[in-house]
Image 1 (cartoon, rainbow, N blue to C red):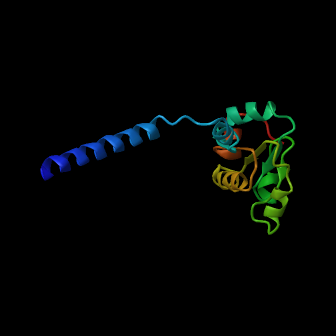
Image 2 (image 1 turned 45 degrees about the horizontal axis):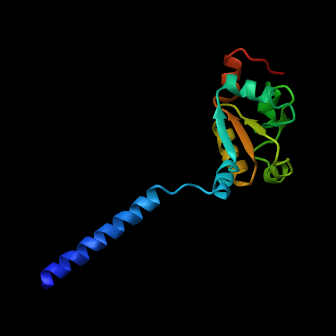
Image 3 (image 1 turned 180 degrees about the vertical axis):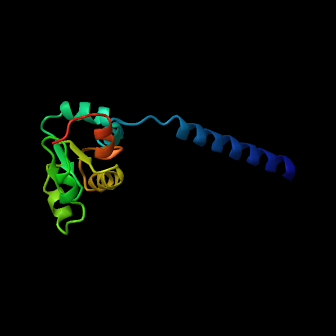
Length: 146
């Protein structure tokens, strides 16, 4: 009798735990959860052609070159603002930008701009795009510089 009672308890326990798993797996997001998911910041690395198209589609966006002044002088994108990543006041300058507008960032080959993209994302910027391959790739593709 004890054995039968134990089997019944075990069976009921298994049945209840299976129902809890099913509830967890079929959970649908509430409208507030959906809003939170859509409101998450965008941080994307784009190839030079997609970067060019996206930038052209966002004329009010900020375009930031995070290279040194010497690198910037060798050629940069039209309307780019130089914000040298190595300057002591770099974070202050970046945080002065409008966080609600898209920010496009690039460097020489993409390493620094990828780091800055993550920095901007964690600082609350809504949309940040970095150019993969940097200005080296941009120039190799025959795209214009100043």
